[in-house]
Image (cartoon, rainbow, N blue to C red; front, side, top):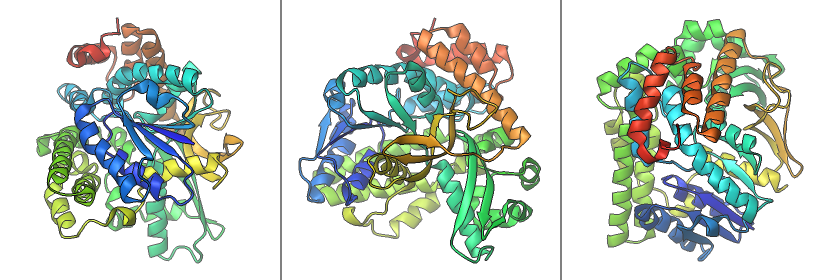
Length: 467
């Protein structure tokens, strides 16, 4: 079987390749990494190729800049592209910030700009796949994941499943607190989650036959002290909502704090990531010049770890936290390639593949057509819910009822998403502005038109198709 990875600038691709190759049940005879950028082919691409040799599978990973070669005879395709690269993200965030609006890469205006320049490129890959690998399943991690999956579904050429490790991460954090606080006698629990990508809530958490959400909400300040992942939220607001939000709800629930934090930090998260990724690519190149694949892996793993450890710190705390993260990482030797732990991002993608292949069927949270799961949305709307994943496909399971305030946000954002997909597929700039005006973080049509004009000018060729 052939796995194609549409990397397109994703620095996490070597970690994903390592995870696939380290999986004893992996049945891929070829992993084809598509990377159009020459610098990344020589750094992260080369690292992925040499990881295969280090794990005793030389020749399994191939590297190409030709999309037709990558898309030919693929069984599974993993998409994590970034059109415009890290500099595109910086533009997305700066344009919104200068107008006093949240500038996050996947949410609000930033997510809109990212989607508008990404959808045409993803559609071109889907057209290739429908011609060269008509039976392939596309696993989409390209952000904004739900919106991009909505576009792929609307085009109708490729079977696609959107994935994001955010929901599983929040549920794992809740489970850790429940365990540490002695709130469950056994290790068994069941969580109920529903929403859209980067707009979801844990509405139920049952252990020992008891619903724990009311008690967890009452102790939310304790949860915040236990894990900083909950620290971005106002406890009284979370109790009023009556469900535990995933971290991206922060941008909706406390936009003023975000703007203040980024102002105090003096940079956006996008600027932090741009600098980290440039350092990472330079470090890999230097390591290959003076050492072997393990040296390159160590340089890569350390900086990828710093990026992980500082996730959302700039946006929530007004400080990237890089100094502390670098000190903590440098105090430990990076594990050998074969000993590295499987991350949430890679692990979820592999579980989807293993489920569809029948090796490990199970229930996962994915982005797929609603099909009546959330009864206030249309059947073909892409939603983020639990589903069974097995050889017969992916099928939604009953979702918990969302609180009314959550439903209102989901309805507004989904209407915005539908409009952005239509605008991207037709090249209609006016429709894009109207859709953006419907987003809860955008203060009306005048602001939306100004934002879109700035994005079209700043992104140049990537948004030139809009008229």
